[in-house]
Length: 116
Length: 117
Image 1 (cartoon, chains in turn cyan, green):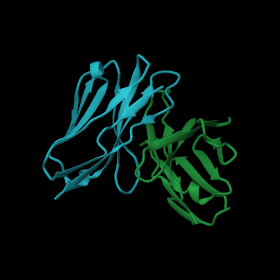
Image 2 (cartoon, one colour):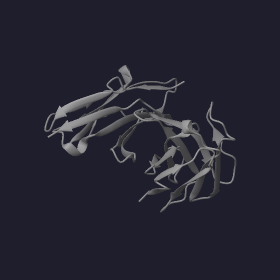
Image 3 (cartoon, helix red, strand yellow):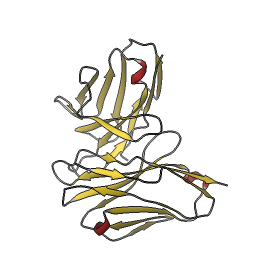
Image 4 (cartoon, chains in turn orange, brown):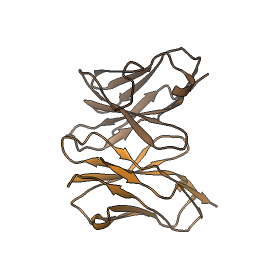
C-alpha cells in the first residue's frame, strides 16, 4: 500500500518570505515517481514537477526548488520569495513505476496563504 | 500542449437526476483517463481508471452502477452520476495520460463542481 503524508495542513506567510512544504511517503515499490501539483482557488490542478526514485538530484525551477531524500522518504518543496499568486493548495503525489503506474496517491494537501 | 477540458464546470441539479460530465483531451489522444473526486478541503481520491474501448476499473468502495464511465473514443471519457443525491455533491476532476507510455504524467481538467439539492 502507498501513502503520502503532508503534515502541514495550512501555512500562512507574508509576501517575500520563503515557505517549505513537507511531504513524506510510504511505498513498497523500489522504483516510483513523485509529483507536486498546485491547486489554486479556481480548482484546476497544475503540474509542477515529476521526480523518479532513482534520481536524487535536487531541482530548482525559478522560485521553486525540490529536495528529494530517499533515505528519509521525503520530497519537500520550497517556494522562495513567496508571492500572493502562490496562494493555493499544494499536493504531493506518488505513483509506482511500471505497469502499475496508473494510480496517483495524493497527500492531504497543504494550503498556502501568502499575505501582501 | 496536453490540454484536458472538462464540461460542465459547474452543475446544480435536483436529487434523483442523472448528471453527465465530459472529459476531453484537446490536443492529444488519451487511451487512459482517470476520474477523481475531491470533497471540500480534502485530497483527491481516485474513483476509476477509464480505458478507451473497454470497461473502466473502479477503486474499492466506488459503486460502478452509481458512477457510470464511458470512454468511447481516444479523446473523450464521460462520467455519469446516476440518480444523484446530496451526498454525491463534490468536485470531480478528470485527468488524461499523454501518449508515450504508462509513465507519462497525468494532465488534469479544470474540474466540475456538482451540487445536488
